[in-house]
Amino acid sequence: MEVTDVRLRRVNTDGRMRAIASITLDQEFVVHDIRVIDGNNGLFVAMPSKRTPDGEFRDIAHPINSGTRGKIQEAVLAEYHRLGELEEVEFEEAGAS
Image 1 (tube, one colour):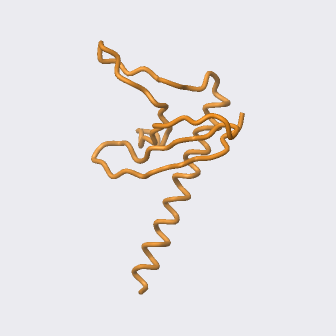
Image 2 (cartoon, rainbow, N blue to C red; image 1 turned 30 degrees about the vertical axis):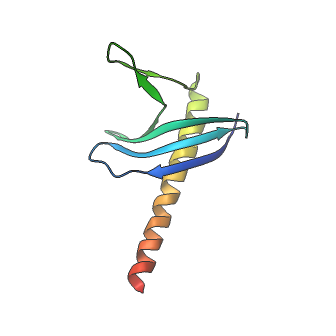
Image 3 (tube, helix red, strand yellow; image 1 turned 45 degrees about the vertical axis):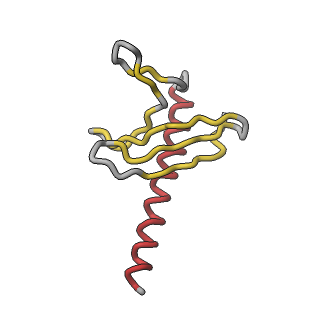
């Protein structure tokens, strides 16, 4: 299984969420609403979830092994950092004008 596409939108909130992503797996299956969270130990990826009637959150879709979770996290965070670098370049270019 490979992550073949990552679409990411950065968000500006007062909370710890930094971005929302969608990933495509093997160019055949899409998972939406993956969140990039700024945790106590750095950035991590949280899978899509919904609140149950008793107030708990349950993942809607999630990897079943750590290798797959690692691939997803690596791909999403790489795109997050790539977009951050692009935003810095665009900001610098706008300031140079």
